[in-house]
Length: 116
Image (cartoon, rainbow, N blue to C red; front, side):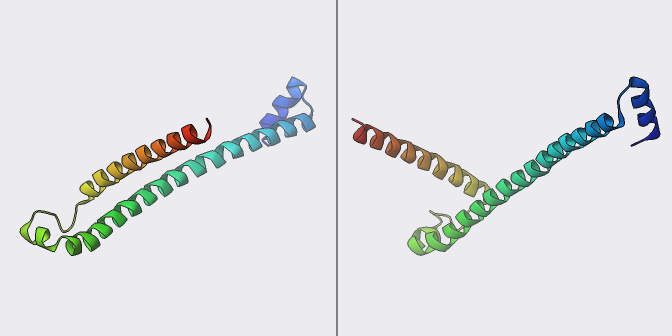
């Protein structure tokens, strides 16, 4: 603590113990705020990394399977042998929407079937 803080506390009639208790509580509150601000960027970076790995997997699975499944169409240029990052993003969004729809339909089906 600063000497000026101690002098101000004495002028205000605050005991040294009360003054130290206030500093301890204030320090704990600032530590809790700091902890939150340290976690949020880490979570954001983790989500971005998982998303990029998912896009990479979509690109790799496409390049690995499509030319083998449709060699004639790839040779004629009817189907792409590899896809861009943007196309992988669009495919990931499409798959997420379709999985969400399928999950919602399955959940609705089970709830209607078993709760009658």
